[in-house]
Length: 247
Image 1 (spheres, rainbow, N blue to C red):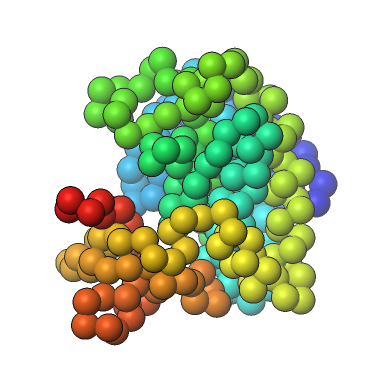
Image 2 (cartoon, rainbow, N blue to C red):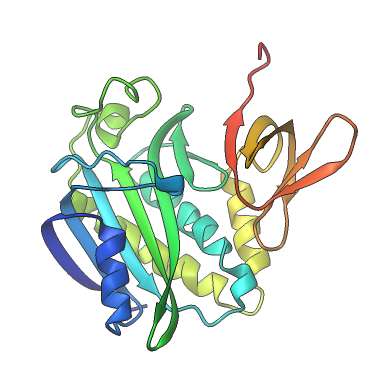
């Protein structure tokens, strides 16, 4: 994949800008990077703290040719790419289904994939936010979030991180687009995530909370959760929280 990077001092959201570019016919590989987001967002309309110079705020336009039932795997693919990029900075990350990258159970990065209708067909915009520094964390996330600076004691720029991330995105997206892509990406995700199986979790769904042990992924990336009666719930979308032994 060839990347074309558009840089902004400030945008409402890199995903919003990338989606607008996709609707105008932007080719696959168009990236939007901003120093700051004024209305950065995560899944379920949550806010992503996006202070100037404190993170990599990055979105890329994809135009996948594979079946739409496998589009949820794009988030997992991006998680694998972010995981491997962070390893290059001496960090040992974990991936929590479906879109969080953790270090020692603290969130260092998040991913938001959104489909976009465009004149050239369906596009997917993948937004990635990675914390560079913890200095501007608000009190409500200070205990649950971390950053490259906090984990390494070193300064990392957004450009450094983007330079590391884009080759991994290209590599794993090519794998996902290949003949055995879904299975290959699930295998790659499994090797990098302690959440793949045997992790006791609480999953918040629409109007329901399910608790059980993770039991692998479906072929489209949905999470399998084995509950106490031995049955397996298939979770297509929901918030996953680790349940520690003391509850």
